[in-house]
Length: 457
Image (cartoon, rainbow, N blue to C red; front, side, top):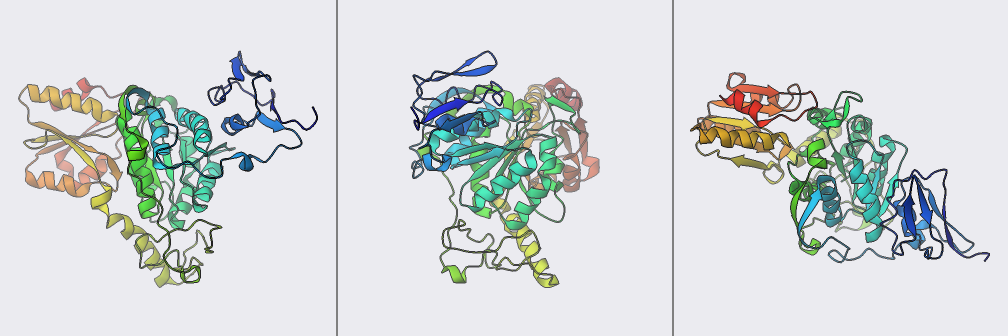
């Protein structure tokens, strides 16, 4: 019938990823071979599946068909009312836990480009975001993805992207722009072997210095490193909370192992998750200064909601307009640094095992710390006084805590990381080069506990 809404599958675009199948509430879509099959008798042309397709292979036809935005719910479901896995124990992949953590934190926009080994995060968000009134979009590259989430955040929507290796490199200019413009976003970089294409399916920890200094100029960054599926959920929530509290990009740096492994996780009721929402201005629009030095991180109203303000990557005054004045530029950079460094007590998180009596402390992060913990426990069964220091917040680096351990009497630090030696330099700066030994490996294989045990022998 002419004008009747109907769903169409564009075979030329469909690559048979199957993301749309679980999204369909009427089971009208099935994956048969390399393509999606549509049962028109079951399809009610609701359009929900069109939001999940990363290749725009699903589209609604019909005279009275509406724009995608008009098919969205008029308002987002209240927190805690969104569809979620049943609270309790689950056996879950790290990438899935990351996506669920983002939804629990209030993320409603994802833009990205698929790249191993982060693609599972995109696949999960493509399936889940339409269920909560959010939006997923696959863009042409990571440059556009980073720009899209920054723009969405300025419109008032909590936003995220995920990438790996070369994609993280492409994001650096727009990441720097988000730092300068003080835009809260979350970037998940699932680390793999490099440089360049490197080892796309193998774990590594070679991006940790790029996370700190990848974009140019003097800036601060917050970066969290999970070592478990549970932390993939919890630290994703924390990343969004820190981004909103300090109005800054926050990085989550799992490696391939942490993102792909499956283990038990105790999922909470999302209604009970502590979430930091964006700070709204309390002054009249004509008096609002989005970069006021009186604030560590000024309130950020959504564009189109009554407040008009200028956003630029140039050095700028409190009102957002560019300036070449040296004093104003210096004051801006000073505030951007202070808002993070002055809050180290809130931002920094470390995890310590058997530290109280340790004479030797192993320093490790991410999945490598799991092998390090096993090596530490094995050493202690042989009477060795060994402990584990795990930075959960990698940036800002918890230098003061390491200094305190050295002052207390720890005689040796053993730095373990899956690269050629990046964080070892930070440990040496804190406790002195002579006190640090390094266990380094960058061949695409996990660092085994026996390798660390040999270094402790």
